[in-house]
Image 1 (cartoon, rainbow, N blue to C red):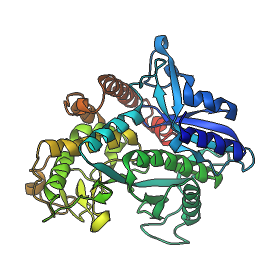
Image 2 (cartoon, rainbow, N blue to C red; image 1 turned 180 degrees about the vertical axis):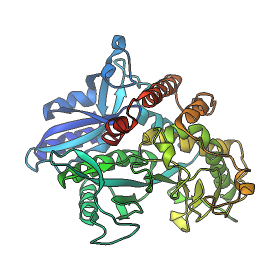
Image 3 (cartoon, helix red, strand yellow; image 1 turned 180 degrees about the horizontal axis):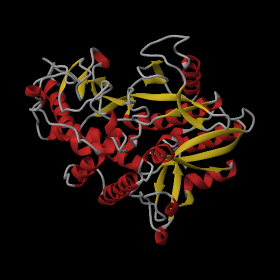
Length: 439
């Protein structure tokens, strides 16, 4: 075992840790975990902890149901909401086959592979996430309702904003876990909130986003509320986005620059690659039927274009300088699996670099109110999940990033899900029970 593993085992021993959660995600970004006792951890690091992969949606059939969870020692985090005596800690895990090889459905491994490819080209891709969510009231039984917690709007304060204490508790909890939230505020929709994170490497950002969603739901529940990461929980209100900010680093310095910089051509090609490939990967960035009710309104994009500071565009270049200069992809939503989303977006950027793609002219128009003479000339994002799945299935590019089995399973299960959604006799009940309550 490595020194890091030994340090982790010592931490568990010295800090009264009694339960360890070994966490991972399914294909769709839903967190799963197994709890083990401290004396099991040496075996967990050396051999892995077995689980029934057949019982995890999309993983394996019953004939090959044994997989192993091997904790990543660098992801140790104490869960602050659990008891201080008899503490609970959590690790994210690699998913292995019994022979020790990586499991094809380990989406965290997919992202690590993409990161390694980028590093071989001399770059580290830095990612920052801006994640929106809604807070809803619960009924007398603690079950979620669709009544927003407040009627506040963008950047409102108390008493219109009733969520400020909940956001504060979330941010403090995240800090205790080693995450670094930078800003938090009330968003446009009633009961809608946003918390943004300092940029980090892509794997850490994806791990942090999974942690963030768990913390938000946990703290909301402790306050008698229900947190929803659904893209469009209220049909006539603002949808919730997951804006992905990206830059490229070399030797610890941001080289993501436009204009006269020596790195401008690389940056332009990276952005061009993301623009070109986003329609093909939209099924992974926006994986629910409900996702497409968000796109095209309330600052969510519909067309493939870019500009500086313009929130109607697919890609926005924020007004930032130096280490904070970046691009912002505005189409993804919080229902995505962040490991797959980041892997595909980064791959798209490097596709642009490898093929020396030229960046189109910026478009400064307000695309929500632009004349058809402008919008008719632009490529569009898919109109619905069915179209998005079709584009993903025929995409040669996606096959360079995702293995064939993962891609086929994702498309197959999402197609079945879409068919079930369309067949539902009561669409409102189906939406509430299968999406609102669980996303």
